[in-house]
Structures are given as C-alpha cells and as structure tokens.
Length: 117
Image (cartoon, rainbow, N blue to C red; front, side):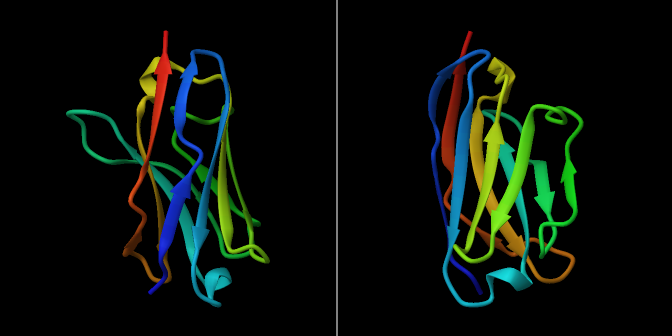
C-alpha cells in the first residue's frame, strides 16, 4: 500500500495553468505505475494521464493531450500534472492513483480544480 496526498489545486481563469503534485509515502514508489483521474459534478471519474515506473512512458486522454503533462520524480516520491491552456470543462476534482498490477487500488483524497470562463 502507498498513501497519496494531492496538492496544487485551485481557481484559475480559462487559458491559465496549474501544476498538481501528488506525494507518496513509502520506499517503493518507483514500483508503482501512477495516474491522474478527475471527476466533474454529475459525471463519472475519468482517466486523465498515466506514467510508467521509470517515467519513460506516458499516456493521456484525448481531451487533455497537448495541454497536460504528467511527470514523476522517484527521488522525491512525487508525481506531477502540469496543466496548461485550461478550459472550463477541465473543472473537476483531480485524483492521484497508483497501481502495481492492472488495477489502480491506491487513491488520494483529491484536489479541486476550478476553471472560470
């Protein structure tokens, strides 16, 4: 198990940027595939981005490709989500998640991102 704590959310105008951070506990962070998800009001939680153990492979939802960048620093046990050119439809609670197998089974509490038009 790994404990995850997100930070960096807030209120930003459309076109602006935010960087989310997710700090993980434990000494095995580098063995976890990490992901970011989001959930908007009245909608299901959706995948945003994922990054492999070493950071060599990244994956993005089509809706954020070219605007968001996921990265990780295994020395700091932290994964980041740089969000640029934000749109009102990016408004959601953003969650950090970790997995060692096929299923994301470690989740943070979430951080609110609100994009005003």
